[in-house]
Length: 324
Image 1 (cartoon, rainbow, N blue to C red):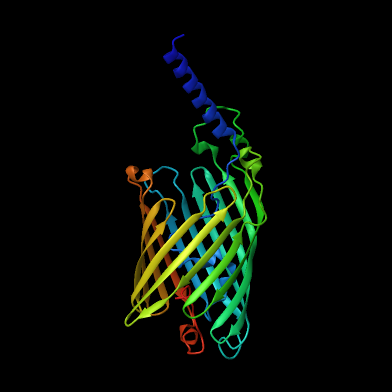
Image 2 (tube, rainbow, N blue to C red; image 1 turned 45 degrees about the vertical axis):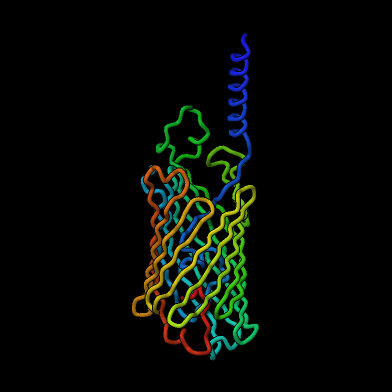
């Protein structure tokens, strides 16, 4: 055997070994939903925000990711939060918040739904600084439809989980520190590590805890207000995801901004207020990874309704950047 043929055989063997190793290695990745407008949907990341406003707040939205790819992720959600107890003077003391969050995710043959209830306690530390902590508790439901896949093996373990539904408890915690012009939030999601190995036949199919840190500050310059905001997401075995945006409020009813995600995107953000009660959020992701060559489109739209707006704008109340 010539030297060139031997080298060629060695390279092929090494390549096959590497591919096999990749298939048998234990791999972790991002399991929770991703939102480009994380400011508009901050309640998803941190349950401590429940009841953060002296209003009943309802939001609903839909995210369609990589629109031209079959089986691409889509997410739909609805949330509600309010204060159960409020002192006579707004922010004159502590308050209790309550909320609920429903979400439905579709990724190819996989379906995942969750319903969580949030409880939060807010403490006034100083006149313009408050601290809150809270938790989500509820259920997650997983499902799988093998008819949406072309399986090479008739005894593939995926078939055993097809058409079945699996329920798991869900629990998340969060803390939140805010002032009039800045905020810091820390949270952890999926703390119960749900095991859904019966769904796809893998002993490594376990929910991992996802950690989030959100921080931002508001700057007011004459008639223009701008806010840099950051979201850091980390889970075991995965590369940290980092979102950074800057929003500019041109007037009390319209703001826009740009965002950058270190994994794959530049994002355009828009926010419109109507009658001080309704909010419309829209974002469009400009993919920077190789997927951009497939002409993929990612859209995200949210609507919000806030009641009791007159009381929430009293002089003694301070709403942070997340409560706009």
